[in-house]
Image (cartoon, rainbow, N blue to C red):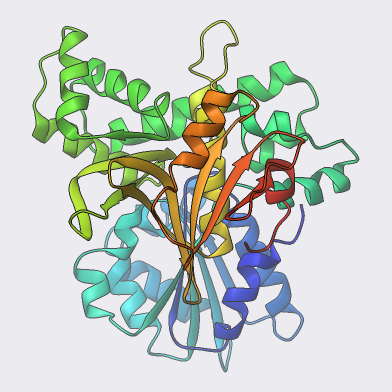
Length: 393
């Protein structure tokens, strides 16, 4: 497996700190591998290391609560600073109390979890200023290129547009095996995990909402519009139920909601959001007759890549004309349109016309899969394949 230096480089300055290092992200995005890579670096200078995987029955059977975890560490640590690595710790009852205690006694603590509740509620309030958090995502294209070189296989932009970047899928050379892996992954982390974790009883309603949302990525929704769709499927539904189920998907890092900003009101429109999948495979495995939605997947990928690059991203309303993204970093602002192609006049006018009456204080960008350069004096055109290899805009 490649060394994911993008993330490790952010975590490395905190190796010796008593701050709790929290590594979060969707399941199977590579958090455990990053934890192992950090352990390898720490092992070069000490063997005073304790690693526990709370998804392993051998661990969870013997350590059931915070007190048992504290006692285990005290019985097994060596003299001096000890480095503690706890994988998927959110499954342990009272893990918060154990972390608060252990960090006080010359321990450097690293924890992973696949639920955003690790970063919410009482725990983070009590530990304000005493933890640092890092979000891990499935592979972006630069990482795919690096990993495929290691595996001695050829990477493909077209493949990424359909099947996304979950790391383990690249170990399977057969497309059927990859699809089977992704379908099983979807069943596990999207359906079964959430239904068990939140004790969801209305399984048909939940699955209907999940399927609708994940195959409708890169679109603006309100809870009301989703509720209306569910009712058309002959399911009783309320807006509160929709909001609750969407929050479950967000807590598990399966989707992200991006708020819409408007030039008219100069503020966030809280009732409408654009929803993006953590990985476009969630859309593609729900496609019928291999009619993959590469247009919306492409926009979804651009969003994921921008966030990976460190941009703060919103959807923008330019006086009624939607601009896919306004991306900000280091006091620089970029307005970005994403289209599969602008070869046809209608598409060209729609994408480039979205920037009308905006002035030239911020850079305006159109990203397409076209080979021809469509840049103008006011709008920069970036080819999708080139964008995927960029470190910044």
